[in-house]
Image (cartoon, rainbow, N blue to C red; front, side, top):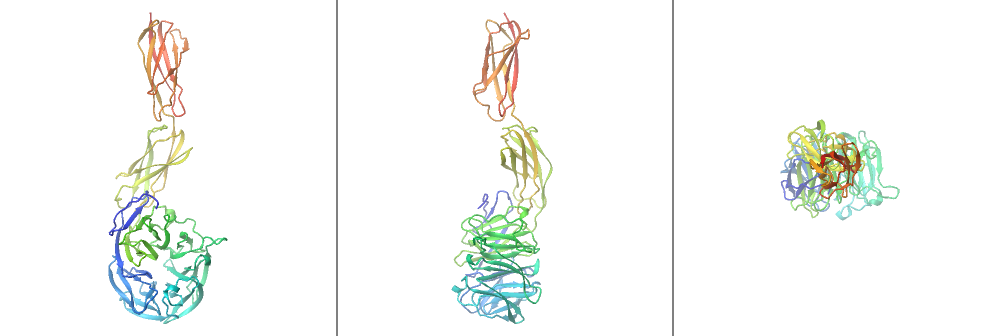
Length: 572
C-alpha cells in the first residue's frame, strides 16, 4: 500500500478508506448490504428506476432462483423470479428492458413494472453461467455447453457466442476456448467487446471488438498480449469502456489495469498508476459522466482493494483508496463487481470474503470536482536566501466549490545542482495562504516547484515555480578593545566570530594587522578561534599614537568573509 493511511469507519466495521499523502479529502459515505448469495453472477444498474439488480450465478443445482433488486440506498426492495439459476444480465439501451440469462433461456423484464415480458430459447441447458450484453440494438450471450460446475472453468472448454432472434437464438460462429467476457458501453452503443478469460496463460488470451450495427457481427481490431517468450499473457477479469467510447480498460489479474485505445487496442499514451503491491486486478468501471474510473482488486489485509480516481490518467489526482478487511464487509472486490450510477453520484461494489459471503457497497464519491489554482506571485523570505538558513516561500491557493473538510497541503520539490529533493508539505490556511519552509544546503541556483495534487473534490492545480540564488551565509566579527594602552603594558583585544546558517568549521585562524599613526601596516600573529567563536589578540606596539587593529576572516565554502577594526591610543 502506498502512502500514509488515513483510516475511518465508514458505516461498517471493516471498510478502511486510504488516501495517499497528497489527498486530503472528505471521506465519502458508504452503505453496505449483506447479499443472500454464496456466489456472484452479475450486477446491472438501472438509473431511470434507481434499481440495482444482482444475480448469484451459481453453477450447480436447479429449480427456481431470483434476481435480487436493491435501491440506490442499498436496501432490498424486491426480486425478479426466474425458473432456473440466473447468471448474466444486460439492460437495453433505453433502460426499459432487463435481459436475464437463466440456465435454459434468456428472459426479459420490464424495468418499470418488474413484470416478465418474454423469453428466448438457448441451445443448451447449462449451469456454467452466461455473459449477456446489448449492442447494436441486439442481445448477445455466451455459451459453455456443458453441465457440472467443476467442469465450467476448464481452460479447454468450448465457448460460443450467440445472438437473440425473437424467441430463439442464432450462433454467430465466433467460438473460443475457456470463458468469454462481454462488454458494451453508451459511448459506442454498436461496439461489442469480447475477451477470453479462464483459458490459462498458455492460451495467450485475446481481446477483440465487433461492430454490431449490421445483421452480422463484423470483427474489428483484436490483440493478444504475450510477448515472443510467452510472457505477459492476459488474465482477464473485467472489461469497461469509457463514457466517450474512446478507451477500453481491462482488469488483468496478471498485469493490473490496462488502458487501451478503442480504435486499435494499442496501449493508451498514458496509463493508470500500478495497483498497490500485492493487489490483483478484478474489476473496472467508468462513471457515465466520464469523470471517474473505479478499479477493483483482490488483496489481503490492509492493502487497498478499490481505487477511485479521475478517468483521465493525465489528471494526476491522488486516488481515493479502500481496503476491505472486515468480517462485515468482505475482503476483496469480485470480478465484474463494480458499476456506477450514470451521473457518477454512486459507485456500487460487490465484495466477497472468499468463503461464500457477499456484500453490496454503495459508495458516494463527490458529485462534482472543482478547479484549483495558484494565484498571485510567489514571494520568498528572506528575499536573498542563504545556505543553511530557513527560507519561506509564500503563496496562495484558490479552491473552487465547497471548502475541504480538512486543510489541504501544498507539496514542493527543490531542484539544484545536487538533483531534486522533496520539501516538507505546507498546510493551506482558510484564506488560501501558505508558506513552504526549506533550508537550502547548497550554493547557487535552486528552483522550487509547488504542487497541489488535488483531492476528491478538487482537480490538481497547475504547478508554479520560483527560482532563487542561494548565497553564502554571513559572518560577523565583534571586537572589544581598550581605548588607551601603553607600549610597555601592551594591547589586549578580545573578540567573537559568529556565522549564520551551518556551523562554522573548526580551527579557524583570523588575519590580524596593525597600522600605526604613520600609516605603516604590519601583519601580526594570526588569532585562533575557539569552539565557542571567541578569540584573543595580544600585541606590544612600538609607536605612540593612534593605532588601528584590523581582524578579518576570509570565509569558507558556505560562509562569506567578514572583518572588523578597533582603534587604540598608545601612550607612554
